[in-house]
Image (cartoon, rainbow, N blue to C red):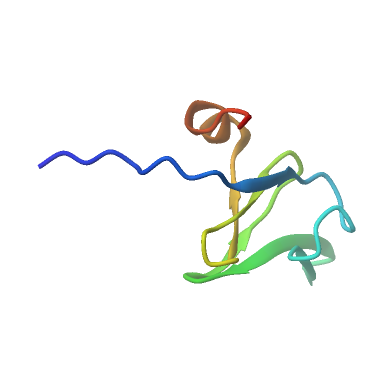
Length: 76
């Protein structure tokens, strides 16, 4: 069977550094900062330039810029 995603308008913000999105957390690993978001599936790493998407239930998750560009367009 084949399925198509329902058209849903999402909220998203491109993240570049701490303070750009309240869901992004920081921890230190071997003297280097690691940025992550707690998602419904567990923690996911966030890198500068990633989009932080707010899901339909208010959850947050990161999306790489190239995938975001292929998947989403500006809503009117």
